[in-house]
Image 1 (cartoon, rainbow, N blue to C red):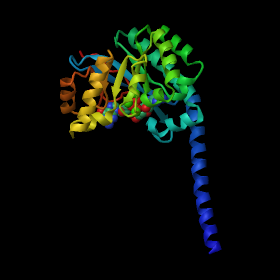
Image 2: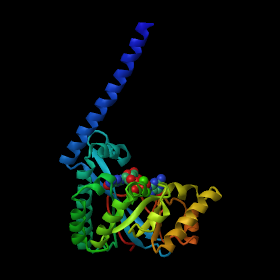
Image 3: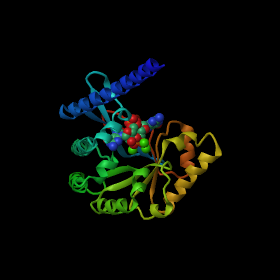
Image 4: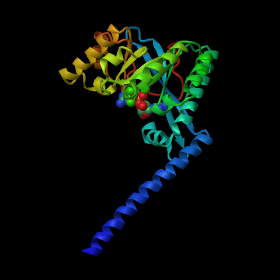
Length: 270
Ligand code: C2E
Ligand code: CA
Ligand code: CA
Ligand code: CA
């Protein structure tokens, strides 16, 4: 009996050991990725619901791993967050997005806005405000949008209100990402100096399946409009979803129906 439990013990400790070394290995490879410039940005279009015109693009991070090829952010962002490396990678993302935006403009491609995702660690970093100030200088006021998830803003409401206020004064736009999943307190929401709400794709997906999620989408849109905020739906994949969202007066749409995240910028329709 004693031997048996020892074997169990060593089995588990081996597994934990393996998991830890895999993690350490990934962490090291992510550091190399940063040094060797293996990260790339993909851009996904956002369009005006009524006219179908391009209103902006969202930068989405990918890792071009020499071993595995293109890796989606879900597989490495949690570890970047955990190790704090996200601050450096996030800075890279902002720099890259700003440089790309200026390049499009120089080539005559007019895109109203470029959006980047901001992680919690980045938002709390003491250099973040300065970084955004410089970025806005490069692209011009009103052309850079920061997407911040609802849960992050609600974690530290007073701090968020203050920081977002400064970012807005600098000329950045701020959208609350994954809206509807983070249990916003409505009284805080009205005090958050944001410009847009992004309806989480899970609601867009289930809105056509039953009355409850449709009710959620309907109320997010009217809530946004009553607070003078722009509202955008993400994960729009079907005509049926788009039709319904237009009917509900959703301002903008983003999703595979309009374009997948792509290495090159969506050219204005010829
Ligand atoms: P998110 O900001 O909510 O981005 C939306 C995700 O939905 C993206 O996944 C996008 O490719 C995907 N998507 C877009 N349209 C559709 C659609 O019609 N159907 C479906 N099923 N999916 C769609 P992606 O690119 O894998 O990014 C996942 C998450 O990783 C993002 O969620 C964001 O939270 C995070 N992320 C991506 N890039 C960055 C970054 O540069 N910095 C930080 N901090 N996070 C990032
Ligand atoms: Ca986003
Ligand atoms: Ca989202
Ligand atoms: Ca998300």
